[in-house]
Image 1: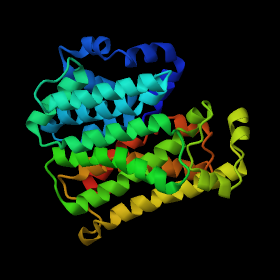
Image 2 (image 1 turned 120 degrees about the horizontal axis):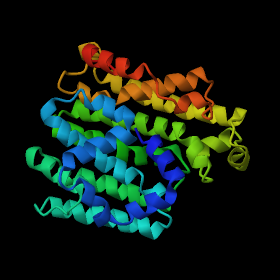
Image 3 (image 1 turned 180 degrees about the vertical axis):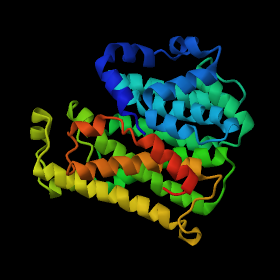
Image 4 (image 1 turned 120 degrees about the vertical axis):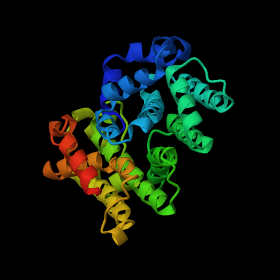
Length: 316
């Protein structure tokens, strides 16, 4: 999931994070000797939910999974990790150039880049997907909010959904049905992540729910930012966006109705990404869609069991 724990870490130690993210060469040194371990630890520390689902991948694919997820985390946190837009642009330019070098068999001395290079040697990973994620994160630097649900959905497809496409490619799964289902899971994942991270973004004066939804429910954004608490209007807006996320999950499940809702065994690791989404949406419903409720920031102790149950039942 996007990574609320890492964002909170950067909020607490913003100056340190800024220095690390603006110096790729310096940051790369500690992991050069073992890029795979570096990526694994990065995911374990900063993306607990993805670390849980990583255990479902066959062992030969786990190195590739951690490389891809570490890349995703690195780019997803650029905006919060830099103090100026130009620094973020420089960071993303580094990765745009790095991907060209990786595919030319000349990866830069950065542990994530080295790990991705190793993954591309073992699997067919389209460069297009990496560049699409980079471009979406670059647009995010300039436009931190979305006016419409359509814009937010497009961003989700270019980030979360595209990451799932990379995982399908890694597993050599080229089915259009799987890609269609992954697209919807990615959108649901992105929307729920934004909802859970709303309090964090509110501290920066940013409303992550599209303006067309907040205006419909008369959400007073300045009041939310100043009081850092929910309101009836905000809860209605959260409910509407959560419903959209749930609808995407339902659409994804419908892709497998011919098999009784069961995902092909080789693909279930990818679709296990939906399990934390279901957990977040369930918690939101329990707290009446109050995104400021502390329970949303606590790890669900049942999640590991839910992930394994999903794996064995091949459902999400």
